[in-house]
Image (tube, rainbow, N blue to C red; front, side, top):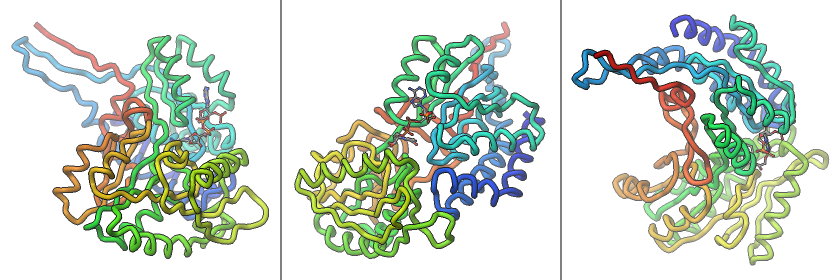
Length: 410
Ligand code: NDP
């Protein structure tokens, strides 16, 4: 691990030295505003530093007193781990999977999303430039069918997928059949609950950031704003004021907040969700001036949204913010738990005891009180229900692909 730690420190330097190059690749491939792309690269560097400093401690043998001469738990690598990765954070998602997995002594092979091949190849080069041997990290430019054939090969010892529930279900089924360990990080429809005693201005500011970051294409975006009726009008005003300020346009422009949607076909699903909401009585408010050409989608608020609308059920990967008004905290929790997803949640209240009490009632993998959810190398990340299986990041993620070996000396 000592040797590997040095390598990861070098990976972090390579990332920081070439931030502009990598950020531009991300922005040009999938349309993320350039400031956000730079931040993504910095986060990958932080992740490498974190594991370089802490992985040895996480992988240390754990002594257990059983009455035998000596007994302990060792954490050994499994071998070759195959990752299927999405395009929405083309560097971060790959690093989040690969760095802990490689720290544990495994090698990684990835199939990146088909719309970000340059990111895939560039990431491979980052590892080589940092001094890793060839094939310790490999990007294969292959389609989904070939990816499944590779998982079937005996040399593959585990599989991790980040993406949609459909892809996760298919890969989970295959891994189960082959009896290979699997980590699935799938979608979410995170509730963002604002109670009557919340700091409305701060909540509105965080809601805008959480819902519209990366044009809404994030698994942990605040996809459903659930607001108690007493403050619904004030919250709407504070939220709308900030949405009106969002600048939509060229993602290479430093001022841009919302770039294009990553794939043309996603525009159709966003339109469909809007049509469905209107059919069910919604009156969407549409903001901003989008460029005429390109896969742009204006930010939308749907006030008085309800759970019979698709927008409150499916994972909406775009800048659409439904606001559901509820009478009290109990209804807020009920609605928060009403989807198939359980990735993350946010609660806003100045009564921290109350918020922590409610946090226990929400079925999700992470919850933030008076803040946004951000994945953080120090904390486990993953979901329950259809949002996935297993955890990434922290010591829990590091142990996702290890042989937890029991050794007893009598
Ligand atoms: P997918 O789940 O289809 O793609 C994610 C990755 O899985 C890609 O590398 C893709 O390859 C691969 N893949 C897809 N299907 C299979 C399969 N059957 N076998 C093996 N690999 C597969 O997501 P999309 O990009 O199509 O986005 C659709 C929706 O999924 C989004 O609107 C969003 O709701 C959700 N999503 C969630 C993400 C998250 O962070 N939780 C990330 C991305 C999407 P290829 O690109 O070649 O199809």
